[in-house]
Length: 253
Image 1 (cartoon, rainbow, N blue to C red):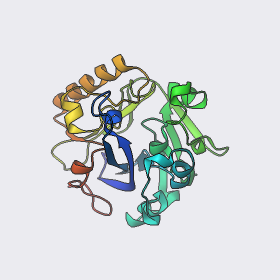
Image 2 (cartoon, rainbow, N blue to C red):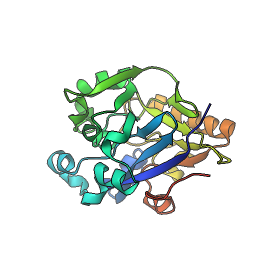
Image 3 (cartoon, one colour):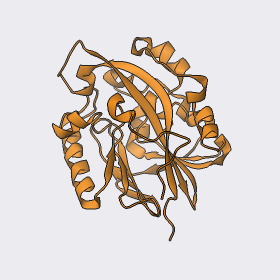
């Protein structure tokens, strides 16, 4: 059995939210610019993506107050080209969840099968009023999309593990990747907690589906990290993001 050979982070640009959306009810009135990125996994079974960033036009139309900044190269096709691949090279695409900043590039990956939690699809297609802006990008649900609906924890390919971590959304997944030759697996919790400080304090994001489930998912991620001795990656913290390797650089042996 062969595990992933490399992992690359694809920079999708940045947006602005209030601190109280990063740490629920804490820091109201403090704007924070946060990064958005997706994860590209090179695997013997084929090229796998975890999330696809955001679409600039969608954010400008529905959430202009988030002040998006995204260059042409930061669009998903440009990031894949920077990493040495094309959009048709991706065979599998996993959405941690279907909020606009995690599925905006799905439409570019026409040959890929989309793997997503079955409850997430239901919620995104018929969101509650407080979820409408989060699910503002509906382009993931295009006519040519091919879906593989998941439930529970799933091993997608050798060394590529998905853990159901609901709370932020009903069908939220976190990702753990074992990379051939790396001493520690890489753990991407997506939006379970946005920043190292929030994670340490069990503070979930202000935007969530179920706050009790969200806290329990933070604690579950901590258990997974201990059990696997995993290196944790945070999704929406600009300070730590600047320390990460970005495409074309890779996490590889």
